Image (cartoon, rainbow, N blue to C red; front, side):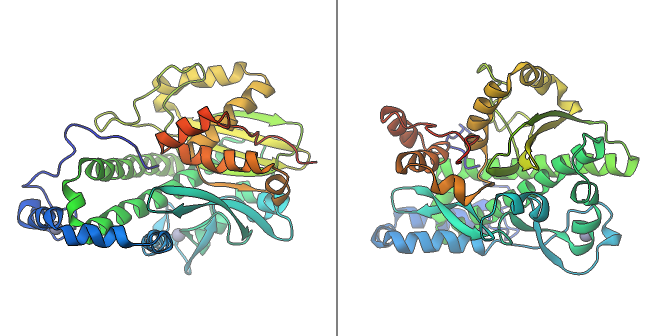
Length: 377
Ligand SMILES: [Zn+2]
Ligand SMILES: [Zn+2]
């Protein structure tokens, strides 16, 4: 998530390592370059001359350049074969169910000079939701309990759904940090821009938080103890036409009370794991957290239990769009939306990082003007 905001101490310390990874201290590395670039008019003018197409291309290139292969499997000595692209959402069980002619829709960024927008793209289901986070062995072996068996509330299944969402998010956060570093290298003046520095600091903290969480999952795995994942489960009696798997930090409970300040650089930010997907004749809804975070999430999860299916769907409609872009849709769902609903979907997801967009949508009465849980037929 790109955070809109900044904090009072969003500055790089002169005698701390430079964010460009040179190993030198900031003051003697990029700081002079940042001052020079800030005062250079020609550079700023050069960026202003870029066309929207060029900017979109550059942003996508920045993202593509950061892809990397790793295995988040627990027992590294068992890693085998290459790192292949692993599905964050099961191909055979889930994507199959929502695809039409082997295609699904996903969100894609579309950058212009003004902002980074969002559009819907039709992609092959084999390429949808994949990331380079597991070797061949771990992708197959570790996840067998959710690949080969229907979900039946086993603690190990809850653990694996949560863990995979965490790994996907960890991979994405590592890439986001690389993007920020590459932007600093290209545009050193942003190293003294508070908003940019703040976002960089948030990225660093996110990565630390996610690494700590993965370590806890690892301990549980080796202790064969899967009781530390608390899961809220609800089954709907119809098949939805989207699927999502994600890990994110929520700010508010159902009634708008703050659970944690997700913009704080000082507080530890805790994550929940969300998997919502269709099965044969129904829909599984799984929300989880680690029980050491009871003090934050116990109340929220009790609230979830009290919701009717209808209210739960309303809540998830907001939650999912507000916090994740890792959602895949059936072409039937997307192609049956009205033009206005489709616009509401892409603009509302964009509005989670763009306050002006949110105001525009509210004024236009088109904010959250869609229902993910609607059936197209
Ligand atoms: Zn440097
Ligand atoms: Zn491995």
